[in-house]
Image (tube, rainbow, N blue to C red; front, side, top):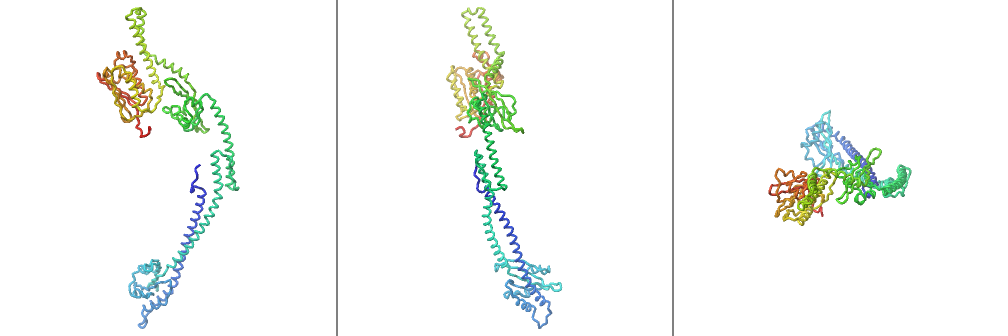
Length: 607
């Protein structure tokens, strides 16, 4: 079993979740505390400033509404006297501004030049127009500190007679807030460290039983049922551990029962004469007995986990779903040219009570002898053809003549016997060709295909004819230098090429040429065999693949032809997924073309 990664461990996840919850809680508490602290300190500072300014406001209002005689000091002097008597570390400056926005007095000696000038502060105008105090916090560029600006209107009988413009040093408040936040952050870090340690111990109490059960499950997967999970308590984890141990015992008993049943089944299968194959629900072979391996002539490692349709050679005709629905048995023909070999397969579906298909059971029985009898009977019936009538009639005529006394004539008797022998041999060839066509028509044959390099395959057949030909005919080859791999039945393709080359030699005059060529055309290769024979009339070119058609009937019969060679070739080429046709010009020769499916292979695939 794959090892659990560090961050995938439930132990680590539990600790992380626990820590995250604590962090979230602390963050919420910290944010609330910081917000309330900030608000409280600012409120206290503002209240302190307002309380002190109320005293100043009273004195300033009295001076501003006082009726003055020529002997009294000016209003600026009176206001300067009032402000000079006020001293505070928190308040930086106090300005008295009248209703016309002129500065009447300031508490800062360095700013006395501003007295009499018009105030340009927007906050003053807002306070005067709204008749309400106006407050804001600004950043002083000169000192680099934050200051609170508070503008309070001076009212007399609901009329604004002026304003108090106050700037106070609020930087101390923010420093206090930062210090308290740092203390809070340190406390959170210490608390979090303690929480992590406690969380690790708490997580172990939950994850230790789970880890034990995980190790037990891994041991059970390897077939070890002797291990037990330790019960740490009577809580839910303890009850789960008890249930897990009980499950282990039940699985151990079930495995023992299953193994016993499997041994019985294996004994029955090994002693059966019929072959038995079992598949899973996807159609892959999961069980096969020795009898089936012997019938299929395969080894176990080549069969197990392969599709059943491929094992039985049915992938072209049936899918696994078709085999599940199959009610009748199927004949499997593994016959060779030397020996027939036919099996009969019977299919049975295994399924649950709910109808869910678990797989397929295939029973194989060697049906070679029975099928051989049936095939021979069908083949014999298919041999009856009116094409046999001509040679039989000829033989009967000559035999009747010999019986009536012609055998006594030493001049004509040997000729009659030679004709009879020739017709007999022609009937034999005719019967053989009819048998081939009969099997093709009834679809009772299969292509035993394999991948071959076509140029080498084609060359070997040409060389065989070149070695055995008797007439003076030249062979010319126009084959490409590249390797062309095709999937063909080599036996049947050899028959096709043999028939075509035999016809080319048969109709080629002495000194003529027989040309062979191979070209690529899309996803097919095109094979060409051409001769310099008598050719075929254009009207009859398309008929040369008909059964019993002969271009020159007299010459064909004289040379032993049956008229079935090209018909057989056409059936075999079509079975390979190709096409065959002819081009001919009367008096100049005939060219036979046929195509075979070809797939371009990647470099190195055939290495």
